[in-house]
Image (cartoon, rainbow, N blue to C red; front, side, top):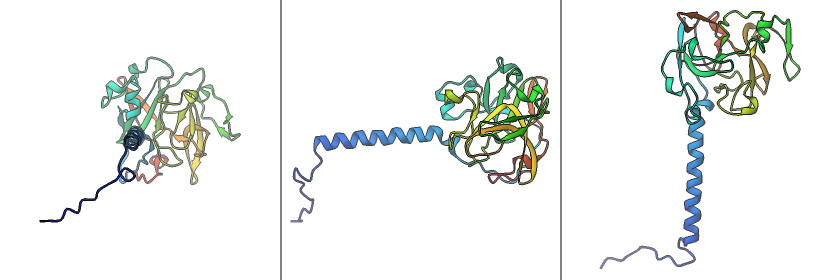
Length: 238
């Protein structure tokens, strides 16, 4: 007769009811953490895309899992073209793609906007002085578009999707870099000057590049001024 080698587990070796409950609860907690991680993955993941030629193109609404769970106003418009009439109030913003890259669209409040006020310069909360661009080119009907890749670690910043205490700033979930869309300033990267939303704090240390726009029959069209504004984080564009 074949010998049964199945181990016999005594009470001290077996899985007691209390241990079973601990394991079950622990597994549930791990599952919850995994779900949360998945929900924010699009915001955390570096965005790299080589060999793209930027051209005039519309913005298409998109929404990561966190935005969908929060039932943001544009969640039902994913894949549709962004139009000015959607942005009915100052402060409304949306996640979007442009030429296949992440972008952020915001209707700014001109009363708060330094770029429309013609100020010569402004100082961020870290004490850095930036030259403000008077009547910033590419800001149309109070709509401003920004490149959706953080200069620090290539994550995807958002506008009013989370962190209500920074709801008037574009905020990056990875390392807390923040940008003011009401202050379009001149900055530089590797000696190349560009326009962008003023860096307000965090490790990025430079502005979030602007995507100049024009309005065509109510559609918001991104019209790249200089492709090299966006050449970082592994992106190779023309």
